[in-house]
Amino acid sequence: MVGKVMQSPRTVFVCQACGAQARKWLGRCADCGEWNSLIEEPLSALGASQVSRPALTGERARPYADIDSFDADRLTTGISEIDRVLGGGVVPGSLVLLGGEPGVGKSTLLLQVAAEVSGRGRSVLYCSGEESPQQVRARGDRLGVSASGLYLLAETCLERLLEEVDRLSPDLVIVDSIQTLFSLKLDSAPGTVAQVRDAANQLLFVAKGRNIPVLIVGHVTKDGSLAGPKVLEHVVDTVLYFEGDRHHTHRVVRAVKNRFGTVSEIGIFRMTSTGLETVRNPSQQFLSERNADVPGSVVLCSIEGSRPILVEVQALVGSGSYGNSQRVTSGVDRQRLSLLLTVLEKRAGLQLAGEDVFINIPGGIPVHEPAVDLAIVAAVASSLRNQPVQAGVAVFGEVGLAGEVRGISQPSLRLREADQMGFTRCVMPAKNQSSGKVVPGCQISGVETVKQALEELFS
Ligand code: TYD
Ligand code: MG
Image 1 (cartoon, rainbow, N blue to C red):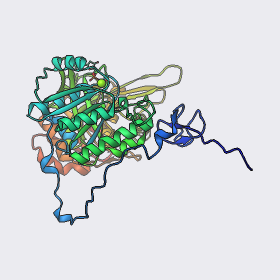
Image 2: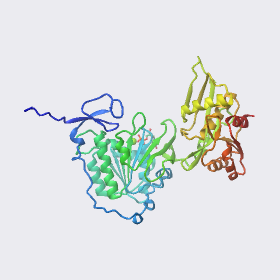
Image 3: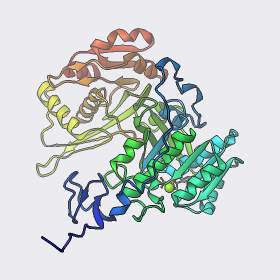
Image 4: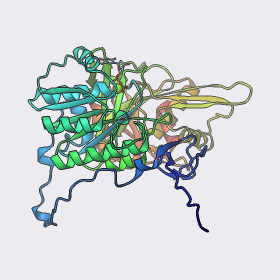
């Protein structure tokens, strides 16, 4: 064959969800199965030659013992709930990604962090690609920000941002959001895989190279996962999710990845007219609107990270119409509810066939730990019998398929919290009964089966 040389394509289709590449457009990514996620990007944008790389540092391997731990020089943000989630403050040189739905309060939270940090005499560069400095300033006025070390930059160009970081050499950089940044070196549009990846890498070099912590806002997709390539989550040290319903005042910051702390801690906030407020006593907060005399309301002591929190579980059981009974949950797993209802029918003899069952955790804090089982069971039974659970009783324990009540973690922590909040009796797994010693004023009813628990509660 002489003559014709196959022209190599100058564009490629890149899945915006996983970063996989395809020669032609596909309705569905062959790699991750996401629909309609392929976008045409110039091939050059993805070429390694264009993406800047850090200079070699010539660093040598050092003995383990000579290496300092960084715990001492964490930068505390001054917002206790954020410090808690981060594991005690921001580690210098770390990259933290904060994801959340539009309007949940990401910009508000980071502006408050910026204000607190700069109020302590550190300099902060707040780069917003989404809002003008006037808009940020207007929000800041609402939040009562009055800081001298805070610099605002409304910029979407990555190179300009890096120049400003060089010039100011701040103690903290905030980028709102990574999806709006673009590098002049790449031809792709902002928010595409190539751009997001390059911006994340460049920010990583800055963070690690200059030992500056960088907080980045990331958008989430419709299904709630972080928008952009998975590589973004791999590059950063910490991934935080800001959750909460725009219609509720409570907001929760949860770590899903943290190289410098545990991922089980949560931070709880309340959105007010003057910004986000930390919630100091969540148990009190969540129980403040509870009406204890209503059937179907049960309080459980759940553990979130290292902190016990009392939450209310509400159940409503009513006869379903036309034979399709509904099972609807908010804040707990729906399949878990189905399982527990079957256990109630089979092991405790409750008649639930044909009944609609609704479970709700008011306040907007989901509970996903096994100790919630017994509280759900008790709430359903209470609603079905139309008999309230006695005031001052807390219920918790895991329920097994045989109808047995299984032991749970950290019982003493839970008991102490219940005691402090004025609960006088706890129905809990018999296996954990010995922990009752920590609360002499609280009566402990250890139960071995679901049936026994219901007898304790309703006889
Ligand atoms: P914002 O931080 O802009 O959300 P995000 O950056 O995650 O998109 O917050 C938006 C919402 O927060 C907005 O609906 C108004 C509300 N809000 C308050 O209720 N109080 C306040 O003090 C501020 C600044 C915002
Ligand atoms: Mg915003």
